Image (tube, rainbow, N blue to C red; front, side):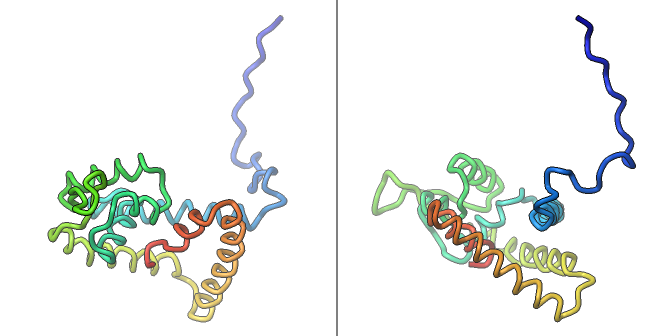
Length: 179
């Protein structure tokens, strides 16, 4: 038996611009690509603030809602509990959040934004405003309104499907950064 021969790498010109597996889903492929690029741009902006992607959503929730149980925070952002715990550890080490026992239930923890994190709020808002500007650059006002309208329709359709699987997933997705 002979060993298989290694194939030479294909040149970019030989690769299809759209993978054949997504030929029946060009819109889904486009949304996936745009979401990935948007997350990269958001990550770059957040790094300048000393945050990792996703941490800004935790902070936004805490700035808007005040002290909340850690379990409620986990539900509100729709992430795995271990992921939220790791995020909170990093935010706590950076001085942005503090955790303390819930006086109503000593088994539960309350999480709250620190006073020093308030300065971060304006910087996160500015970063998100810049991300919005960068994302929509090249679109006029009518196109921006139409994009918002169409994305809302897509979101509602996807949320209907997610709600059938479990309402918590849809609720967390809808809250997003500006609940």
